[in-house]
Length: 365
Image 1 (cartoon, rainbow, N blue to C red):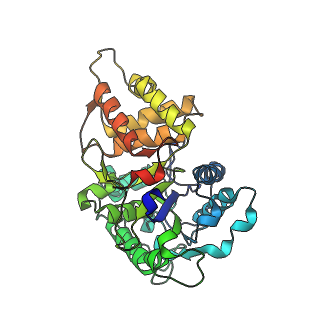
Image 2 (cartoon, rainbow, N blue to C red):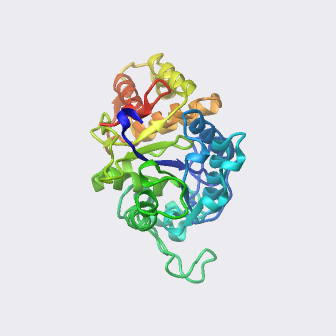
Image 3 (tube, rainbow, N blue to C red):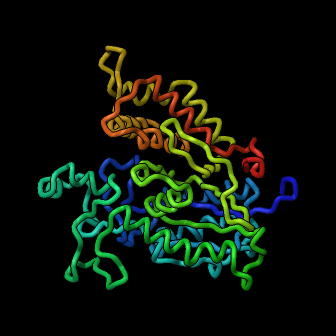
């Protein structure tokens, strides 16, 4: 390590469910605790994430313990990531190193689990604003399911959750299970706490909750945190103080984080190329262009434009998608931005990327 400094690392990876929100799918569902399998695309991305981690010096032998949820899509993602991190050295990983926690399950969506998010009957019964509030607000809950529902599970499983409820559950799992594995356990783990690496593979809302907790994000900003699919996220800790030691970086909207998105050289070149070459901006804004030249778009319109971009360019880089979605998610309610402002924010979003040219140890304070 740089200057003899020893550090403990935590890596987060998101899983992709058959029903989960995906920019290629115009009509996603409320997946929640529905135990659907991992998508084919999710399997490919999990393997890619593991290969990327291995290429950056994080091989499977370095991982002391991996935490994931009780849902099969997250567990399969975890196994694929570890196997890919092992490369030809498959003996360096084992499923016995994986610990499954119900506390890391995706947010529970209650009675609406399994329904399409734009279901006509759902929108008619509750109203579009109410349905959107379940997705984007911190404390709103969908209606709970009861014992007659096929997805009902006995306590301590919830019957519905707000994002705030989910965050409390995840933080409890972190303090009771992940923190001891990072800093305290002395038996059964191959590295001492000052050299320990923990992998967490979970879901968008649970990882969002955990990142908000680690970065001390204000409650009203938690729904704006973006968790990219298939892009590993790194946190570095001082094992003696348990404090995060990586430098805190701010986004264009003032939201700051210690997290680093780990990307490949190809990812990094591609995202810079499409932003600096104006390809991303043109693709999104031209979908709505009325010829006036002074067009401004809302977050919802940017998401829609990005979906159209992906429809016609299936090879678009996953990090480019993540950066584009991050800008939209961090926008203020009812805010509209110009082409120039969108480009500026997209460039600012790339600051938190850890490219192969970066010294991993050098990103600490």
